[in-house]
Image (cartoon, rainbow, N blue to C red):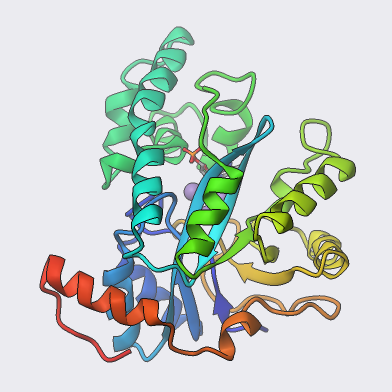
Length: 308
Ligand code: AMP
Ligand code: MN
Ligand code: MN
Ligand code: MN
């Protein structure tokens, strides 16, 4: 088992636990190295880093950036980013700014299907209104009895050709990767198995074009072991990692107790001879970005300095 979990969400995006509670749960469940990767927002990292230090856990500054490539929405994980990096922070703010209008259109679409009050209902579930998204709508639809759980919402609503779906332009793939790499981070293609689903997803040829392009613009990693992959997909994407010489990453993509495919915690070993993504930073254990982050957060929030 791996004691790295490099993909999870807090209440800063669409997770159910605060950064502090999330870190505590990860520590209890045996995680030794944790990355918090909220969608398009890095404002939970300082709190999570403080909590991780208290648990003696290594913490990685992360983010999951929403990107549009051709007609696909992709998620790009940034690991070891520098949260004080201006192009990254500005880029993320720009992506977040589109979410409010999108939420209004989603609510309008649901209203056409007879579901009223969705906008207010979804915002009730969003601690951070700036990151309002489909998971918050999903929780509202479960609350109102339209679906039995969040997973089944994503079969019947909020996805292409279903009520509540709204196409959206996110960051371009080159922008997302350059913000991550420009801040000293490693860019990882999240849950590739989500993009290749039978019938609706991309085929092998398109996936290969994506991987080639991703690498050309600086992408270095691919999620192999993650919450939305089956064990067969671990093997499939391990083969892609090896073929394309990409580093392999692993993460639960945990959102909340009872809501996710996989809980926080130790993850199965990589199949085959993958090179783990942490090889990229083990040789360089204390990047300048951490020191810069501590001082900028101290200035902004007056948080206690922690020794990391
Ligand atoms: P958004 O960024 O607003 O498009 O929301 C994307 C989020 O919706 C993902 O990060 C997941 O949390 C959730 N989501 C998308 N598809 C599924 C699915 N099939 N099952 C459960 N959650 C999903
Ligand atoms: Mn999510
Ligand atoms: Mn994702
Ligand atoms: Mn995620």
